[in-house]
Image 1 (cartoon, helix red, strand yellow):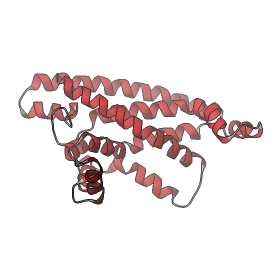
Image 2: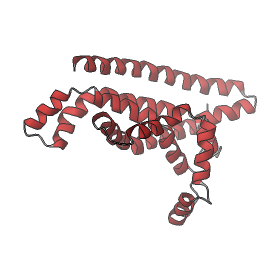
Image 3: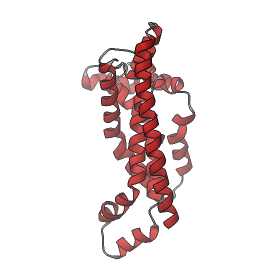
Image 4: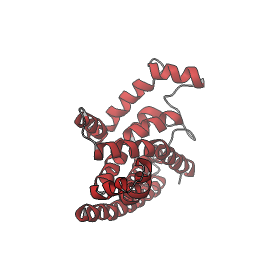
Length: 224
C-alpha cells in the first residue's frame, strides 16, 4: 500500500473541496433560481467534463497551464515555479474536472427548496443573507452533502487528468490512482490489488451516500 500516494490523494480531495465548494454554492444557487441569457451555455460548459475524455481535458489543461501559456507565465512570475506538474496545478485541474460533480447536486438541492418558504422569509423581514443561512442552506444540505461526497470520491479516483497535468512525481503529484497504474506497470499485482480495493470500497460508500441523499432531495421536492 502506497500510503504517501493515498495521503496525497486525500490532500488533493480536501484542497479541491476548499476551492470548489464556495464556487459551487454560488453558481448552483444562481442556476437554481435565476433565468438569464446564456444560462444553457453555462450549464453545458459545466457538464462538459462528464462527456469529454479525461485525457482530452487533461491535454487542454496541460496546454493552458504550460510555461508558454499566459496563465503559466503569470503563475511562474508570481510564485517562481511552473503550474504544470505541480500540486497546485493538480488542484486547479481537479477543480475544473469536478465542476459537474459539485455544481449540479448543489443546484438540485437549492431547486428543491420550496419557493414559498423563501418568499415567507423575505416577507418576514429577513435579509437575503439571513434567508440563505436560515432557510436555504439547511434545506439544501442533501444536495450540498452529495456534492462534497461526489467531488471527494471522484478526486481520489481521477486518473487521466492527473496523469496529463501532474505526471507521476512521488510525494507531489503521484496520487493513489497513478500509483495503481505504476504498480501494474511494474507487475506488482498484490499492491495494485490492495490499492484498487481501497478505491472500490470508497466508491461503493460514496454511491450509497449519494443515493440516500438523492432520495432526501426527491422527498423535499415532492413536498414543495
